[in-house]
Each structure stands twice: as C-alpha cells, then as structure tokens.
Length: 295
Image (cartoon, rainbow, N blue to C red):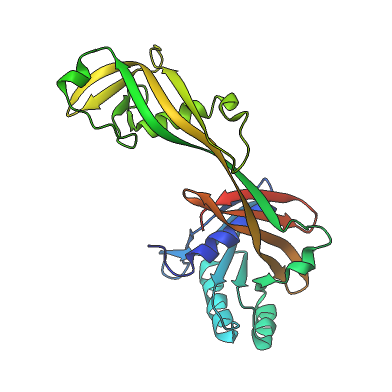
C-alpha cells in the first residue's frame, strides 16, 4: 500500500524531471549521508547534477496537506539541510506557506514551491481542449479452435473452451498466454481488420487464422500437464470500436514565489487497464511532455 504523500512526491519528481538538464539525474526517494550520525537518511526527491567540475546535490522535501505550512517545518528542513550538507533544499507544499514561513525560508536560503489546482480559464490563451477523444479497438472471441500437432489431443482431454484461460506456452519467451492475449498481439498488427468500422457502430464478425507454425516462435497448448505444438488457430470474433470523450478534469500550477515553473493539465478516466490519466506538463517556455499513467 502506497504511504500517504507518496503520490505527491512522485508528481514533483516528474515535474522536476521535465525541467532537468542533461547533466542531472533525479530519483525519488533519494538517500544522503548524515554528517553527524554517518547514517543514510531518506529525502523525498534528490537531484544530482554537475556544474563545471563540481558535483552538486539538491533536496526536495514535499508536503501534501490542507493547511499552509508554517515555520516549524521550515526550521526542521533547515536542520536537515545542515546535517546532510546538500547544496540546496527546496520545500514543496500543496497548500502554500504562511508569511512567516516564507520569511524564514528566505533567511535560511531554502527555496519554496507550491503545487495547487487553478481555474481552467487561466490557460485559455494557449489551451482550449476541453476533452480528449479516446478511440479503442475492441474484440470479443466467440469461438476458437487450435490445430495441434497431436490431432487427437482434444479427443483425449476435455478442455474447457475458455479464451481467458492460459493454455498457451510461448517457449521463446517462456510465458503462458490466454487465447485472448494471443489474439490481441496478432490482431493489433492487422490494421485492416477494423478498416470499415466506426466508433460505437455495429460490430463485425470475422474469422481470423493465426499461423503458429513458425520456427522462431514455438507455441504449445497445455492442459493438465499434457502439451502439444500449435500449428494454427482459427478464431471467430466480433470486432468493434469504442469511442469516448474524456473531459478535462483539472489544471494545476507549479510555482515559486515569483514565477510559474509549469502547468499540469489532466484528463482523468481513461478506460485502460492500469492507465487512467492523460497528463500534459507544459513549461513556461512552451515545451511540453505527455504521459498516460495510473493515478
């Protein structure tokens, strides 16, 4: 289970990575040696870079809380900075800082940054995409029949016709596959299968033959520890295309006290396994990165 605040740390790592020069590396969490105890201490995000002939280290400590951060946290960070002897420490808050905290941070030489949600209208001058069209090629296996080297294999064993069962051994990669997984790997290479289909339109029922008798990829059908080489697979499947409009969910800004470092635009709710969010990170110079990730 992800500990509280970890997602925020990973987000800040991503934002900093977007602006990082080629000489730098970034990791979260990172570790530095405490100069007092000589033990390793964890930091939320660690940037290591090189300026001329010197190596420098920058610590980012993150807090994702509802209340503005006060002087207590800044004082704790100043103590940590001294013990770790890093070149710089940046305090990042999702709720901002109190005025005394900002004054004390400036006195200690600690940079402060805030990541917070902003009104969508602020970015209208350069971004007016209120939704993203998501198009997904889908299929539903109706029937399948593997042609095996042992032609009597299915007479000897009563094999349930379940396309989700991992009956197939790919010997070249030493992994088990279901009929659905094998079909997905092959059909994605045949663009013409969906050529006449439209999003959210009528499905097309097709018969597809998959040639498995190739030397570089030996596939075997396995059931109850019995196996036989697969020569060909006949599959009858319904093919269709699903279209959805994914709305803009929120816009956030990553700022220092005197400037905006970047904007983050998120479209949440993509119906993809383990990938639900489409994120765009745009720096003030106009450069941007795009990612499809889990939330």
